[in-house]
Image 1 (cartoon, rainbow, N blue to C red):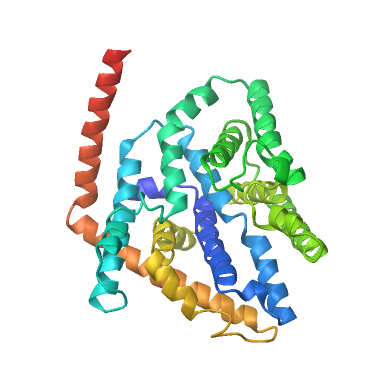
Image 2 (cartoon, rainbow, N blue to C red):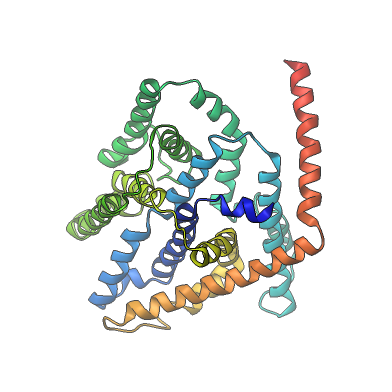
Length: 364
């Protein structure tokens, strides 16, 4: 059964999931490592070009979720499994840091590790879980609309929360989160749902990939055009998830991979092996304790190749972090499978879901 399940997965979209996480790592490497502020021009240019290529990563992740979840019923296990995975890495990393003397044991540190959601250690997970919770309401609204009404709703949402944000960001009364909030995730979810319902893949991906490159290049030149004259334009056009270039760049990249589906069994096997491991890459390297240690070690002051070869050093480090995190997650999954933890969580989630639905049905 598991083999058939995996074989039915869309390998193009799963590959995008992997690439998106590599992009997230790239953003953190160049920005948190301060390479984007290097005084060496070649390092600075290479850093900002990769940032402009990679800034679509989070949008792509949400588009992938919306594409699949917009046609599926709500399942509590999606939330519980995500929560347990976050909690596992938060607690285990804290214990390891205390045992090896990297940090001192404290009540505050323990509370932070045990309650990562309360302390907002992972902003993406907090917003993503909220999106999962309201997904039944979104799906109900989505399924009630015909194409014309759906398109109108999408145009209004993109205009209010994307186009207006790009044009008059300081005066924007609708969303000042820069795309880091639930409102923007809803816009992406609705976008993906529209693509799922009304777009039929043609297998022609090149034109969408070229359009994605155009948005990234425009973003890059916009940054260098206005960086010295106005910080307002720099913030709006480069690093906000809800600016127009980043939004359409993500949509074009998403459409690129929808139109790719690998048939080679070896390629499929590699993609389907790595794809389920990628979310943990974020949870591990963005853990507050590990993140501080990582980017204080791998930063501009410690390492910098002051020539064109810098980009190879950067990608080598990014790939190394990705592989290490994937190996850790692979071991965690094996341990959880051996101890039947996911099976127990799914059973509990299923019973809770049935109980809640029965109570709601009685009230209604």
